[in-house]
Image (tube, rainbow, N blue to C red; front, top):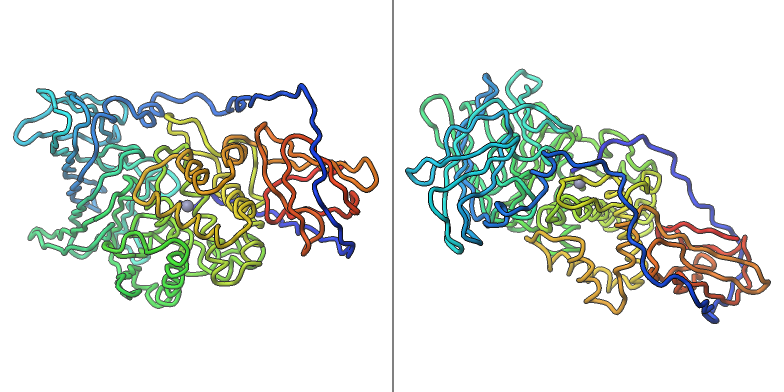
Length: 564
Ligand SMILES: [Zn+2]
């Protein structure tokens, strides 16, 4: 997903002092002060307000969700543009993980449940806001697979930033119907197990629309069938695990053009009046895909292909069916998003939303609390694209241009189980954090191998931050836990304190919330940095540099510096 638009603030370049004094900097000794606090204080209480009943129903992974594992959905519906209605069924196959008589599904309260069937047997159900508890007449057995048909109908309500399910018209007055519901939940237009932890393994999407329209959804196009009543059904097969919110219909009188990247089919769908503009702008898809696969490995959804589909909102990372509404111009919504010129060299929506195919769609968070795994990584992927296309220095400038957008008011990771989406820092602070980790690793060969392995280790899985930290800890000698905790579970970033009390020496330490925080950092003179390893205890080192001439590589580490 793309972040909310934020008022651009002027990026302030950090002036580099042009002093040529070179310093010999060697850590000298560690000051050992007895009696300091030794335990890690708990994180401060969040300022997040109390969860509503709806938040709890949506966010908790309770007994009736945890007792089953999704295997297959077949969403088979008819969309009527005149009535702005949807009707049909979702066939849900699941494996029980425990003996039980009830499962928890979700459908927006304003939509009707027509019936829920187990074969020929109608099932009882109980609605509670958007939750639907389905009850079975006899115990479902652990390890066995079951299939139910959930029939529903109604008028989906347009809502949220991208519409939820929106019935619009194109410039020529023809229907243009789209779905984008990451914030609202897929429940706003179809019945499903609407949570993040359990992704369905595969899915068929069958959408019947008036025969003068097309439906473009996720997965591989399987064919269309004239239903003989003025409607045509479009069939799509998703051959990989998929987030509920990523499932998408895009209904319009689209024009189609196609290309290939090696064996990967590239399909593009745009309104007729934008065909020529799209052919020019979507030429960026190939170098984008090539850039990301050079870092992480093959495009994750090879069998499903890659699509870009024009929509009336800015864009969304619908899996293998990325939706695009950036006006066929570079930048983000026709402007220099980062304010330093680089943004105008590429189409932000093509790069950002497609980057999510690797982080967000292939590697997914198991709770919205850890959504930085989607947005922090994908914003970092923007800078990797910049590095591949325009070089290392431009990438570092790009990452740092996000600094003015960071607020540092709330931790990036929110409370789990209450479906509380993190604030925007997950994008910008998330990417500055990852750029910091690269500098800590301080070996680009090792860094590129590490990020590639993170992706390869966790693709097609739903993970939490702890999984990423554990992987980092297993791959290097460093204990990354306090570093991840400070940046992701605390509001403040680390402050490097430098004290120049005695001529010829400098005392230094980290001021952080995490007592065990220890992170190397480059200090001294640009072009001749020395790496020191501060902890939260004072260390003292000799230096010929003073308060005014001692510099810190703050474009490589997202930190504050405090000199005294
Ligand atoms: Zn995003």
